[in-house]
Length: 377
Image 1 (tube, one colour):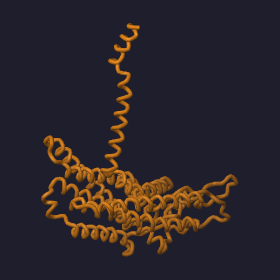
Image 2 (image 1 turned 180 degrees about the horizontal axis):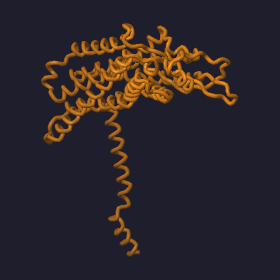
Image 3 (image 1 turned 180 degrees about the vertical axis):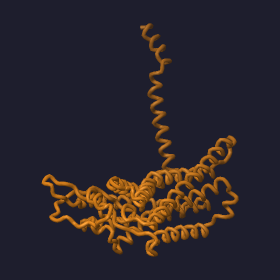
Image 4 (image 1 turned 90 degrees about the vertical axis):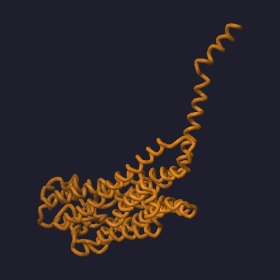
């Protein structure tokens, strides 16, 4: 989605004016620091931060392109309808991750190159800030919704295969994807109807929902909606993947010796990939969803006080972790495929066999024969 990095301080000849609100003092503490001479300094992005943004964008673009090529090739060769449906979902997720990495990343890079937005202009969100904030919400919800839909589809396919065969088709899958994109777009556009707002966030190189200062009822409701939808999607995916995994394990245990189980191997591969998606999304997105909800509640109730700087740090950490979701997601498909897992298994098996052969040369049963030869001599 975007990458944020370190920033340094450069001397500022004049202290910008802050509004006379309850968070003015805390904002000064968070954005300014005392130099050795006692002058206040303004925080600005560094060259290293720009390099990190560029490297993050490059890594994300390459990862998503490689994963998209693998998925497109697998989709063209796939004859199983259930697998084709899963690949259609997965390909759409990779495309969404790719676009969601490029567009916000390019805007963040532009803000880095321009030196960032000064703190006194954080609340004066312009069109670019509105677009960047909306992009973060849209491209944040889409992967979470898609991961939830994929988990539900696989759960139905594993637990109720006949019902799945009658309900799930390519056409309905495309309709489901369109509904997901439309739902995420509707949530992202709520500030256009004065139902919430986007604003610049510390250190002035990205935009998101207003959560730290001057929050109102609509901001609280907007953040609650965004975080609630995201956390609910993760919870549903967790339940569905757990049911799918348990069903496959039980089917494996009940399988008769010599029975055909190639169909189950496809289900196992897809469920393993879904578990990888779910774990990645939970690690990358849960902090931002939780920190955002905590921040807006504390800000709205007026209890954030001296903790403002800490909550700013938590929000930056949360968005950095969320950025890695779009970089790590493609590697779930690249690494958790049957061909790759089979090769890893064979390599590990060969290494274990080689180690066993080496140890076998020093087994205790080999010593008596050596002792007899010595005695004969």
